[in-house]
Length: 153
Image: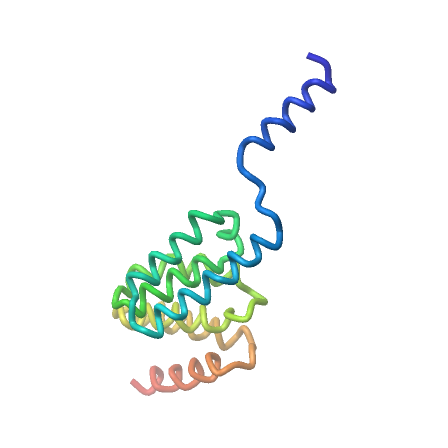
């Protein structure tokens, strides 16, 4: 097979591997998932929120490396009363979501998952990492206050 034929064959195989989602459609789908998850969380439908997170992953798995799906999965698990299940997704998400609007909240949620699981050492470490991050946010302020409480105990 010639180089041109091989290249054509590879391009054809790549094109057939997965359907290409046009950028406007992709953006609309991504935007819809967080809104739907928030609505489920606001109405305390945590299993439905988790299902929405997993549907997002199934539909757009390439979004996983950015950490947003993992952030939402961890958040839903904690709010749904499963803090131990929220730890791993948040541990992975925290470094991935740096610079995102939910960076500080991810750190806070990780610390909260450790607290609810009874792991004070990792809770403290997560709170300290959030404070060290230097983000000016309500989540950082909550972390500062929580660290003060932990040091008094």
